Length: 51
Image (cartoon, one colour):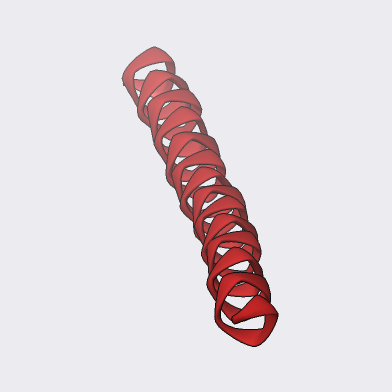
């Protein structure tokens, strides 16, 4: 029984780590998307001000 309990704790820990990494990955992807959006907006602004 103790072995099953330890195994469950191990699996739970692995699942929590995986969820944390997923959240971090989503945050990084959101930051990349925001950076790309700002760069694209800057290009549009530059084109419109050159006219």
